[in-house]
Length: 171
Image 1 (cartoon, rainbow, N blue to C red):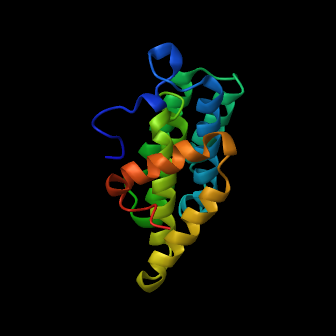
Image 2 (cartoon, one colour):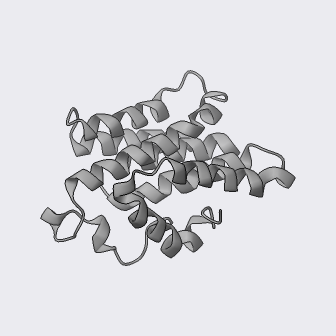
């Protein structure tokens, strides 16, 4: 479970009673897509003929551009997570990262799920002795991709939810 029990109003759009602007919601989706795409090769190396995770990432970006509706992006995210169902390790986590990125269109707080699953994917892709450092490198890479407009929000979210995100953000 990567979502908190109580929804943070900073991740609820203004029109739904929260404080998140549409612009920042879009930035969260784009950042989540970048995190997922960074590890997508770990899935595609195992399932090169399964387009669902890549399509989910594309749907996240298409939603930001106004080319698909939220429900289409959300459905693509579900399909990507379905691609993970019978897998284990890095490939499974990479597919989950893609799925989480797409569902940011529906629930902005899934941005951290995309990032956390990407860190898990990287950790699982290397020998156990290298896992922690590989995860820290991925976390630092992700932070380097954060747009300034959402940087403080995401870093605070990582601090608050690190324990339910498998301590992916100890970097």
